[in-house]
Image (cartoon, rainbow, N blue to C red):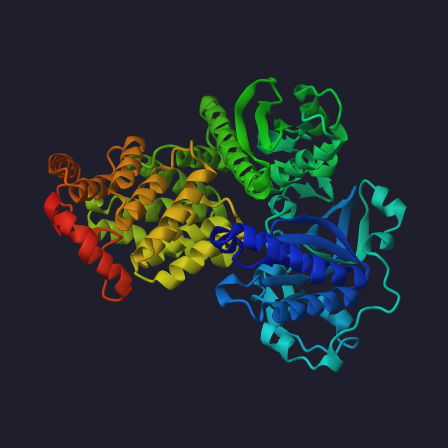
Length: 633
């Protein structure tokens, strides 16, 4: 069964505590009892989903229907924008068991089915449908053959829509087995102890974006871990330094959630938490760990608690040399433990990902050999960690084009080239000119669309799609694309920036500041955070917080001093505050860099179908200051 929460990031952004409480209540009162009642075993859970296995496909489908039917009732009195809605996908097939974890093609297909599922509904494979067809009174629609990445043959998909689940008469609802036992009792001890064991007829419910995502990129061969090289990492068990054994759960939880977050990074092999846990309470030599596990990087950390305060230290080491690449300390309050843990795991995942890419790209440059696809990808992606100047974006474009000549079907290369092209068009339109920018937009959209068709679960593809739709003034599609990108990767900073911009254009500047703060919190030291700072400033500008607006836009300007977008917003902010000398000076600097600048070319300029709330803000807040700043419209 493959399940996650629809628009989880949006729900958490709107009401983090309330959403967490609802999820706990849904699990306690509905989901966990349904799994136990249908003889399922919970393998693992994350913030927005869980991994469960069943010994019977009938039990799995009956459990899924019971859960979705129950969620319909529980959501009935909830406002539509606050409902917790699930997607579920079910597959029957072989899996590989490693300790308490499971993976393999069976898991990958289940996860793909989940991503194809409509909210509140259920998707199952053809094999699963064959097994339940004469045993359950359910009529699944044939959705045809779907191509699944790294699976040789297309997978037949069958769907049951939310409305069909709601319409099922009580007497036709699948019933739980009469002799249900607790889920953990269904798995015999010898199987749980197996290092690797292929099991047939196991149905899997897996959270999208978990360990399957890394393995589906070609990291497993015949059930064995392939040589991992420089793109591999182990998250070693965090140490509990608080002296309180009861606090060990925090250290263990951090280890698991950081492992899961890192597993979302395409092309990065992450050792399973169950394997990493064998090093718990041992003296650790990172170089030996690298040899034992065949990984290039090791993340270590510890947790200290003093009263209600918690301090978490983390450091990344290169196992080949034992040298430290990155370290950071996080302080927080125990009363807000979930938010603290989420902030830490997101920050670590983004920061480590950047460090690994930069280090590997440096090695690639040093080799100076005839570049292969992997080296080209490293060099191009490394540029995403530098200030997004026009020159850097154009260098990226060249590298990704070379990569696609070597590997025409690389979805990541298509998505990254699309991002580079769309960013050139939207950020540098007043330097490139409207005609060149339009060509960039169109090619970027075409590439992103093709990448999405080849791999709809690749989170990268929704960044350029969202920004393209913003340039076409289609706020609904833009927001949907950004939310999809975040659903697939909750650490997707560009998509949070996109939602911040979409919120401006929707006339909701308070939402803008919220999304921009989230984007900035994900990677405050990254070289691409100027956009987060800029729109945090723009949100405050529209809210009338002139000093905050200037402070944040000035920070964005420091990060990327020659970007016209920073300059025209800053000129407006100074004019709005009444500092016309600084406003005029900023406008002069803008026109020196972009002599053909016009406000009508920029992405936040209102369009005929813009919401009235935004037109009013533009008319009453922005334009009077823009006129004072001397910006040509």
